[in-house]
Amino acid sequence: MSWIGVDWGTSSLRGARFDAHGAVLEERAFPRGILTVPKGQFDAVFAELFGDWMEPAGARCLISGMAGSQQGWREAPYCACPAGPDDVAARLTWIEAGRIAIVPGLSCERDGVPDVMRGEETQVFGALQLLGIEDGVFVLPGTHSKWAVVQAGRIERFTTLMTGEFYALLRQHSILARTLPADDGALVDSAFDAGVAHALRSPGLTQSAFSVRTLSLFERLPIADRPSYLSGLVIGEELRSRGLGGDAGGSVVVIGADALTRRYERALGRCDVRVRTVGAAAGWSGLWNLARRLAA
Image 1 (cartoon, helix red, strand yellow):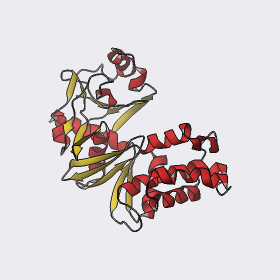
Image 2: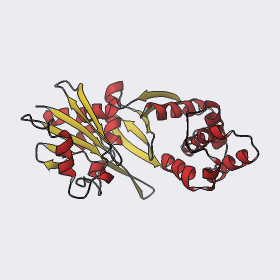
Image 3: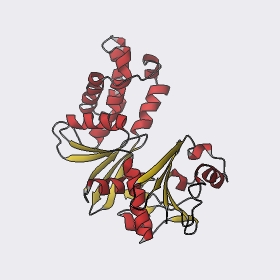
Image 4: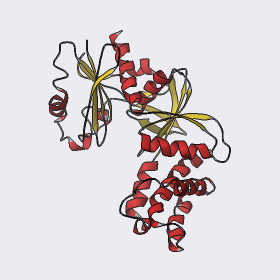
């Protein structure tokens, strides 16, 4: 039996082929997120990009991410928290019985308001396996950052913060856009740190964000530093909203691409929070973890 893992997101599509022990034999990536696929064409796109991997007898595929959303291949109902790998494996939505399945996302409620994730749960399960732990706080930065609390290998609860999306909105569609350069450029550490520090001591982003304009107006923030400063503001606001600031202490696991995890590691360090980072391998490890349960 051969297994394939696919991470099908909003803007991108990645796949991996595993050996019998879960090692990745081959990876593929395409700019074919769910928003690029016409309705009713998901099976055709999948066959075009991964059909050769599915040719051997007994080949199976697990798909995580937004392919299971209302806009995706087929809606996979959310699995309620607390949930671990066994709970998720029992709630798969099969596209082709015994052959292709979509991993359900997770849902939780806080103060009567629901929250959801799709794909991040697989990364958390993979990080647990890679690090050999069963408990912790996991941070998954991105357009919609997730903070998940895990106990005994199960995701107990999580919170979503629209950090990356707010950065894009302020960067492109606010009055601040007029003061920013066309490109973000490389991260300027000092400007990023200043943004984080200002956010942590401010009452909220609606106030602190205006500092980009005023510091620019009084020529106290070079134009090349401004994107880094704004990035520090929105990430600092995320940490402030999580109750971090000053000497907060504790530890977290940050899962994501190097560029983003570096920023979070730097910002969390200002709060005296210890950080371990895990990259893209977490997603593949998580899918293999689920595949092993099905094979058993």
